[in-house]
Amino acid sequence: MVAQHRAGTLKVESTAGTPKSFERVVREVREDRLIPGVDELPLVEFLKHMPERPIRGEVLLPGYQTQKVFDLTYEYSQKILNQLC
Image (cartoon, rainbow, N blue to C red; front, side, top):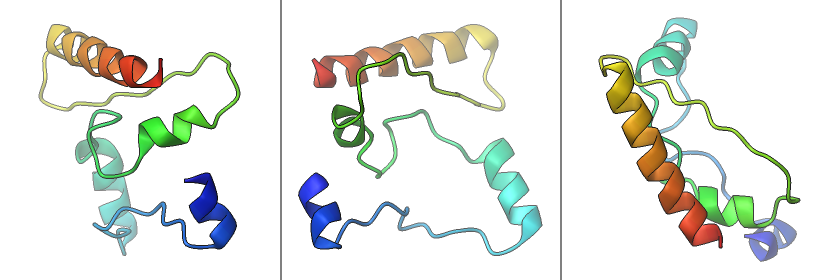
């Protein structure tokens, strides 16, 4: 990832593209988000190059009950942490 950045070939946008209208941006922010580490962007690779400090993630999962959100957040956080260590 660092080498790609230095070479000017790093792509950090999603291939799904950026919403074109304000209404679509609002909808994506509220309804179309994924659990960190699930999408196509290289989250673990990005985090490997960050300075060591506490990080946090925001997980918005409309339609899921609170306990399910907690369970999924814990599960995917563990997967990310295992890949980082």
